[in-house]
Length: 223
Image (tube, rainbow, N blue to C red):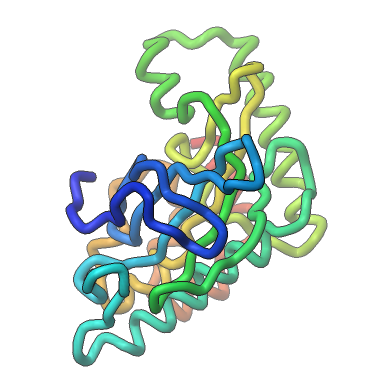
């Protein structure tokens, strides 16, 4: 997504310095960052939902009347970081910490080189080697099983949130739960044609909350 308004290189967020913006979505911006105390880079995701908040200098300002939507989305954004803050499986991304700066929230993640599964599928074309597919399914199935045993449903299993690491392993990223919360105000955040969405995820919000379960992740993995 080509979305203006990212913070410029050199901006400080707590002890981190932004090197460049590496991605943007309707929920905010994705940055490559580093700490002066560490040689390893990291990834920083900024919550700045389009149409609800805007940049004013380094600060994030909520648009008039949009505070309920902004706050609800931010709670979901932070909940993702909380749910994925502890190592559960080698194929699950771990959120390192939450940072509250400039009127919004940032999640610090490890920097993982490699392509998303969507990019890998496009690069390889079809048919994809069956051995690779089996390895991906075993790893992701094990990761989801760990989540489900802990009472957590991911709810965002899709090729765009799965990264192929340099060693050939896979890593399932955060589910972007804020898009579901914000869809009450911004229905366009949910793509009804997304083949990774299970039927229950397209129900109205109260019914969806009751219907979603581990089977939702199984559907996403199969899709």
